[in-house]
Image (cartoon, rainbow, N blue to C red; front, top):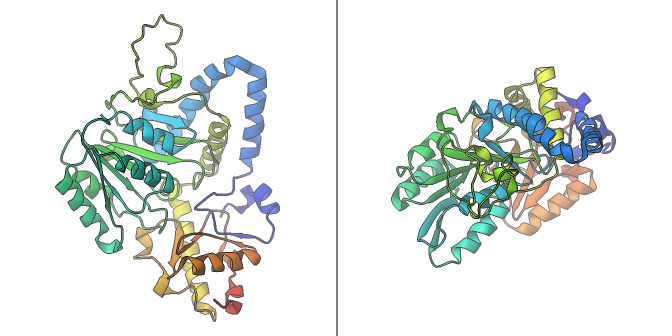
Length: 388
């Protein structure tokens, strides 16, 4: 689909089938010039670069993201080097000395899971994790748990990182939150720029987290959060960006915050990621590339991949151990589950020895797909010689 835009990465990884793109996408070639532009602007502007970043680069990227999410609220987008920093900034705005209940799932990303387990060690914080499996009943079970527990925080992925299962509609989850004071956070990292996302109906109700390392193809260090307008808690974890533009004024000891998305901003970060991400979005705009078209391309690749597996004389990657309800309720990677961790690890190493890049988490082996893949690239015939 877009293979000619990835020549730097592809030429450095000749004869490699890269199926780890749900972890990290190859970057399109335009990101190299973006890195040079960042260096040149830093050399040209020196200390004045911060004004340039905030007046030119930040608003431009906010506009792209607001358009992709359908919010029409670019000013409500705030950036950080990683989503975890943003997540904890929101949590720090809760009264952590009070009795708090958090409803989430058993399949959230490692950083959130670690953080929530640590909070659960406190006597006043109660964490309820709803199992994602069985997949077909997850949404109803999660909504029931939210209604029953009346939590202070609800956190759920839109596409789960360890299976690829996509919540069919976040509407049901949001509708289950009856308390207007409950904080709702959606981890959209595996949905953003992978499948069409429209949060316009919930733009003033939910926090939406995502970033550039995966499907947005901008690399690490460029994560963001859409902040619901009017949500003005006083996060304990805060930095000077949250009051950027007011630094020249005489300040008392009172800590003030911005009234837009930068209410939840932190401190100094590397802005090369902002440059790279802008370059990717500008490329898509110039080439008239839509996320819907990328999604359709990946779905075609996934079906071709599964058909290819069926054509082989192999018994290790089968429909029986594929975690998939329906293609339309799935993200951009396929997950196969084994009985033991060692089986997933062994197959991962075998494939790597044949220049096929995957990754695994426990008993699950994942295959991701991207715009730089073509159906003709798919070849796992080596599996016919695999013996567990």
